[in-house]
Image 1 (cartoon, rainbow, N blue to C red):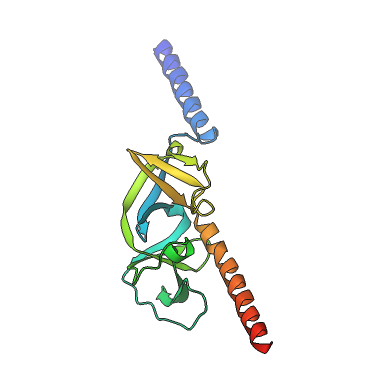
Image 2: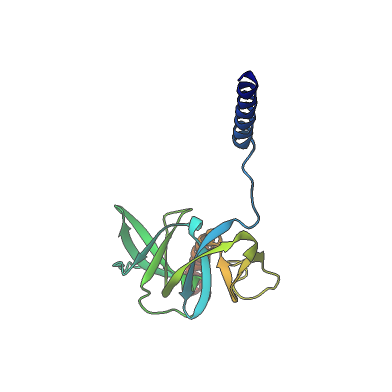
Length: 186
């Protein structure tokens, strides 16, 4: 019996060591780990947005128009007790303006909503399915990567870049207004 007990004690010690080692090791980062994406259309153009880049997805929200010189600003809308500016994603991407986009995402980086035309679905893709863009195609600054999955190729929108462009739009509008005022005084 002592041999059996010694064998069990040895086996239990091995199991404890293996269990402890599994939790002591850093988590493995697998290149094939998944990324969650939303497939959308801005105007007629297909894109994907990382779910991690958004704080919420909404449909058919009432947008209250506000006076503005920014062509992308559609108005304001209420979300969870907060008033948020709503901008047209197609306009920000340099696409033709569409009327009454139904869908909105709120960017996780800031309280700004982006309106777009169609929400097509959710995809979970392997991380290695997202590759850097090599060309200088339209929207490259906002979509520095492409998603290749199951025969589908779409640009991956970088919402932080899109939101950052709002400052550029405001600065360009202010310069244009200043120039118009200056010309009217001459």
